[in-house]
Image (cartoon, rainbow, N blue to C red; front, side, top):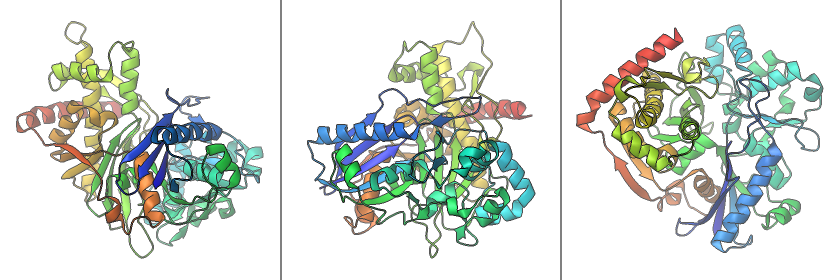
Length: 494
């Protein structure tokens, strides 16, 4: 018996078949093999065609089934993880009216800032736990103001994962966790965020109906089943945004536990049992996957937009003459602090942790006679880690102080240097597990379908693959390098 997990990223869609009994991945595939196209019609914009997610998901599912030697009849339940904060506008036939405005699109920053000022800090933070910011609600307001003909035709708006689930079941629905990530949930009222909807002049009727994060969310219809090679009637039993789902995949469900990831973007995500938020809204608070009206479970999310994408940019800039492994080796040959070379990795849109400033990525202190490829490679990795630490200091101010950080051994966390630098600057132990977003979505599907008796049972087979402790000899020079990096950031921010 298999559980199918889908992870709809901005780079690709990944599918994994998890053997429910052993917890081992029987088959896994992703598509496309090169990064999925992001449309940037204007600077700061980022859009994707939802149909591309469907086509990529179809190919990924086929690849996972083939690798496992399985048939669609072997799949017990389906779970979905997805890129957060996107906006998909659907017409009365559940067809997209325009490309999705995705997470790293910054066109709605000023709209969110104006709403925060008009509604007031106290009202926004006490009800939404965040500034309206550049989230889904503000993106919808942008469509209302700038594309009125499209806006008039909207029947339902949803998130990227809701769209894919709707293609599976024929019915577009969402979750409380999903609404909260779009600033569309009012935690004070335990209802849709009428406060912000009224301010934006948006009808709550445009929001999809809600279903539980775990449990029945619809069944695979005949058309989708035929197209995907699966069985009609297979239930969709879990969905969550990529960062709450990443935390789930690492069994981070209880207050005080911390998860991290460093793919295209980088995230540190801590769970709180209390209504906590940053007064400056530099980190975000959303409903975690196990949040209910009866039990508060919130995710405090620090996001850095440019992590893995910065490392990928560097590789392309070097002409791809080095593999990522060779880049890591070259970086390890350079000293801590890179002989004064510093990299600010903020080149992928407006950064929440910087107060929505869009500074662009910047390289400082470059000396032609002393810096080479190894210095560049290390400066990029250190810059990413230091941007994490800058945000973790904000998290510490609201009571989250990581002692252990859990991560999957994927993306940037495959780099020994990256992990060691993060351990040295935070003082936390970095624990690595053999999992990813699609596998987490599969486990979530098993919880939602009742295949596992409890979340604890679902993670009994989660494989621990190693850890990195702070190196006492490297802590002080790493702190000095961070202090110099932070000073440069403060000069940039003015």
